[in-house]
Image: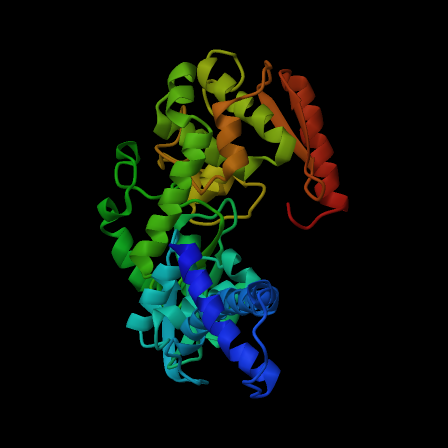
Length: 402
């Protein structure tokens, strides 16, 4: 079928071409070889026909390709988009796990971009869009999608309130710090703490948040209120407890998790760095060997007495100060064993030290240099007295912190 069609087309092509070749001279004699001549002449238009066909094919291919490119380009260029720069203010949240499409839908719903396609196209065009961090961003309504992407890809544009809670802070100090660094007042946090059940505290804390508001640096967002802030701190403590395998380690050591947290708070108050596991061991040794003839089960931790006095940062106590809170369960000079709970917020190192005390028979430790934190350990009472004399000399000649 294809051959007949080609031959028919060639014949009609020949007729026209012969007429053109002879310039209208109809009296030309007929030659028996005319058929051969006609076939020979047909070869020229045949080549032209192939070229025409190729032109159609190639031209068609060009049309398809160019149409496809133009269609994609039109799709990108025709996505409705605001010209910008925008108006008003919009605090927009990129939630953890959001895809670009989900961001686009949320941005459109917030009136920031005109269409989801405009945003996704702008994101695709920006190689940094894969690094967008979750959090809050200050945007405007009716922004150009490209401008929105430029803001979202820069972490410096995150709207956050950074608050650092140092290790060793009590609940009162934590509340004071939060009030100083956020738009809320101390009473707003105290109101939440008055109903501690909403914070997610462990049962063994018995509703007392002391020691369970983890010290760390927090980036609070515009929507975070006192409940969310305090709950975030408890959640961070849970992470530290899990890292230390707190409950399992407490059981292995023969203590409750709450008691282990109490030890951790004492270690935080008394120790530094590599000394923490040693101090932890001294505390356990004193508890577990009450009949040692020297300490008689008394921990004699100054920081706990300072907690009973409602103060912090004082290194050495007078006898008068100790006697003034003699009946306090936090007075470790008059009450045997651990205080009823943590005295401050321990960090990761202190919790780890309480869960993993060093090996040793020490019953005493003295920090002989408050500047460097040098601490000496011994199981001998006489050597302990020597260390105390060394501290006295340091306080008399080198420090006003004693």
